[in-house]
Length: 275
Image (cartoon, rainbow, N blue to C red; front, side, top):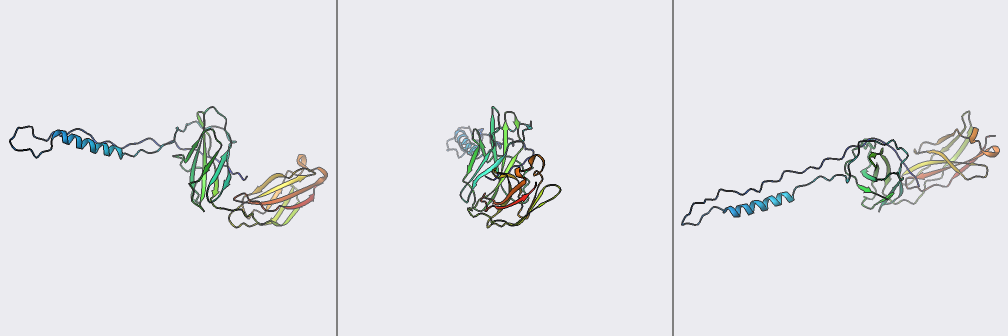
């Protein structure tokens, strides 16, 4: 699963507002003098009932601004290890997940925005949550527009503190085709470590990132870094010497390309002597 996370400050929840309700006080314009002719003025009782009905109708039309279920504390937590990521995304639904935050009273608030260049994820106003979750660490969103980019921002309220926001981006399309395998992988020794270089990959929908893995001796490949830009086609492994030196003096590297839907290319492997 490919995960992304980041941070910023939050805005207080909007105040509850209502419009004024008209008075239902009865009119007293009708004449009270006796007469032998029927009065053409409406009776006091009739006027009162009519005005009451109008007032009830006006009151029913009063709109109340929606507000978050709970207020946002002013105290900002120093907690910084929480994250939000994507489980799956398609043209039908998106599932996001996040890390658990400890506390006696923890609520996870999700805000959804259509992703656009002008969207400042660190400063965008967080007013009414798109979803508010308690006791769960995932949310499935089926109310999506196929082909749309969305940004989900996570705000966590733990006890009486609010944590810094985190976010992740999704693309609501079906995609099962991995990026192309990278080619022309080269490795060279420098004064700072092992420099890896390769030709760029490509993807039919949306490229995600490169992943660099290193195998020391008979061990399993370990992720050591990567890059989230298609054109970032080099990586310096500066942990290959010292305490991180591979056993036997030979390091084996593999580069994998991931797309936005976490499909992964066939690895490209190279070995180099560092002893």
